Length: 246
Length: 247
Image (cartoon, rainbow over all chains, first blue to last red; front, side):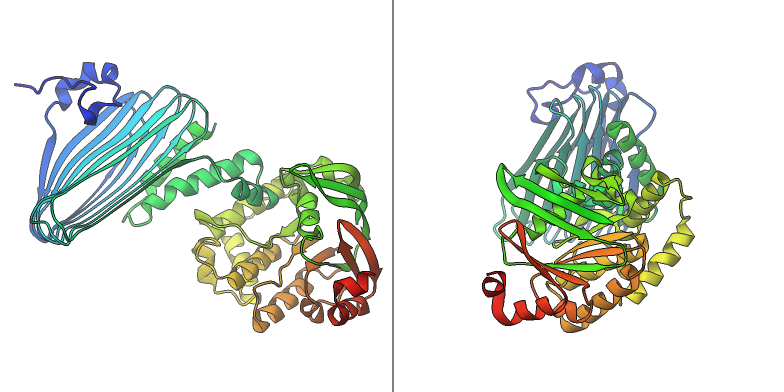
């Protein structure tokens, strides 16, 4: 039996493009599940594909001391969604570095639910969006800290750059904490390119279009700094940015 | 080389420059000194074309071309370099990538061949070494996490790589300790002293002028040049202050 088709009343589907989702729902109704065993490490890079609609729904269980690091670039031309449900047992470590790069009428979103279940877990989520036209980019990130999960250290950093008036960024960090000795930080900002950075780059010889492209590249490319092999995702990000900057 | 005539400029509709005239011929270094708020940085920004700095009267030519009609990147390609008083941080972009793209864009605009990655890295390392900057810093994001002195050194490294014809250096000496001041001063002489080059050195203090001896010194006050003289004028200013010297 497949799960019922989502509605916008569900918080985690609130900004989704349900019309784009409907024809492909069957394939994605059940999330993929994977388990990272005690003390093991898992690293994954998710690239955008050629599809107009690309949905990823993954559940990851991190057992004691397990580590997972996910790099993802959402840049679908119509609808891209990366949905992660992660549970962290004692001392587990989860890092997400994600980008939404969107143009036209596209919707790209990163939706996470990170559950700290064991003591001393650590999670880091860093999401950057670059949007033009009438594109929408969202980050909905819920961090839950269970009653016994003391010394949890969770952080969410979300920034978006809107290049046109019609573009939309949604940033929604959400915390649900049932332990009293935890650190949960979150920061969000939505901005335009910094005028002084642009002038500095132009005064060194970059024409305005190249200066904008370089600044945006910097905004996104920092995400892949820690990846073992960032070539493919870096190149895909540059390609997506070229479409957005024009 | 750089000829400024009766230049008036406003920032947010407030007049800051009120008729600056100045001629820096090729081969010369001119210093502009003046108290806070006299318009020194505004002059630097107007020459480099910062948006929001509006010229209301007068003009400036560079090698006979109308400087103010050019976009900032065109001025750079023509050979003008502005050394920033507060160099700007650009996260996520390494200094190597930034300067290489800037230099190659300039070279394309001038119809010159671009430098390859290897050629560029060699040049950048040489210049970093000459300025006493650790070459590893070239891999770091532009000015991010640099100390005040490191930022000013990094500006001079960029200048050394770009080899401009004319440099406007806006308080390049502020934030430098004595050792850094010496190496920055030596860098300015090495990079910018030449029969076909020129420098406009903006500074509060005489101390940089111990290392880079100017051919002329001008005092800017309330948006006008109120006195001009030889290098001895800088010493007089240091002794007597701007109020006395400008009177």
